[in-house]
Length: 112
Image 1 (cartoon, rainbow, N blue to C red):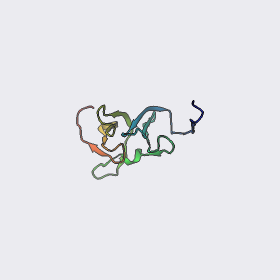
Image 2 (cartoon, rainbow, N blue to C red):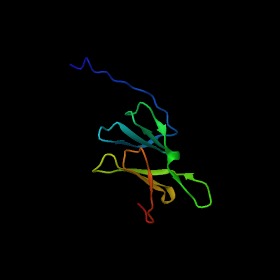
Image 3 (tube, rainbow, N blue to C red):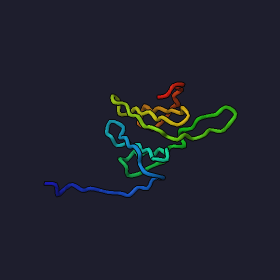
Image 4 (spheres, one colour):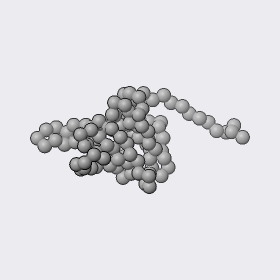
């Protein structure tokens, strides 16, 4: 009997349409959403609460200010649900090994 099951639905508004969504972590409760405008949102609660984390992915320009990236692609590891790569504009790429909790820049000259 399905009488004991309840479903909760919440409306979430992002800056633009969703272009990609990835479920991360061993329990699949962490969610990354990429929007069509290149913003990146993260939820640690399976989609109940969201945070725009795009500004956490910044490229330091020598002698200038750190500029946020525009996300082009999300690439989740097929072997580890905690590893995800964010490919951004102008070779600004970042990788996380802990389901998006922290990020480090990937220095790659060629196209990913």
